[in-house]
Amino acid sequence: MVAAAMSRRKSKTVQDNLIVNGPAARARAASAHRASKKGTIMFARTFALAGAAFVMLAGAAHAAEYSFRAELNGATVPTITGSAATGEALVRVHTETQTVDLTMNVSGLSLEDLYDHVIHSGVGPVHLHLYAADGDISLLVPFPYGASYTQTAGGFSLNVSNYSYAEGAAALRSNVSFDDFVATLGSEFVYINIHTDRVNDGEISGRLVPAS
Image (cartoon, rainbow, N blue to C red; front, top):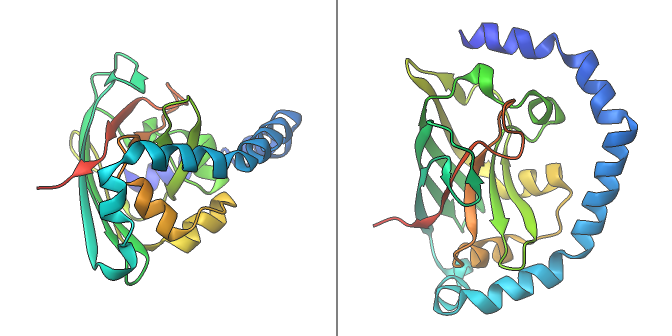
């Protein structure tokens, strides 16, 4: 089933190239450039709101690992979509190697449902997003589509180990440092979001909270 899904996605390469390189894509790129210029201000505001959690994580360079969990659904902000799909995720951040692990299981969504455009753009359909209190949204970590995505009986799973934060930042053309990313995890505004063909902005999502 995975092979079939990948084949379907490859067949849309020409169409997606038109999307990626067309006027609408250039407009999106210009918008993204403007958003990146706002990044420093946005992160400064978020750090101020993070309070004690920011202080705890600010010394990330001296720690080995942070773990976060998330319960995903379509019934809470920022993805009030009415989707019946659900998921659970565990995110581990390794400060010594500056890498990210993700283990996620999703029910009610298949690989076929995942958003084709972001798959072909290279950033994948699953992301960590920062939803700041002032309404700004930033993509923090992408999880590109590939062998780490597996079809299951009732949905799909995603298992990523030692994903380089620098690699993800390069794919996003992000200037957010690893230390700033880790500090941001101390806020209440970081979510894992799944983008689908049905709901491009995200069908289900869940807020990252420290894992017990």
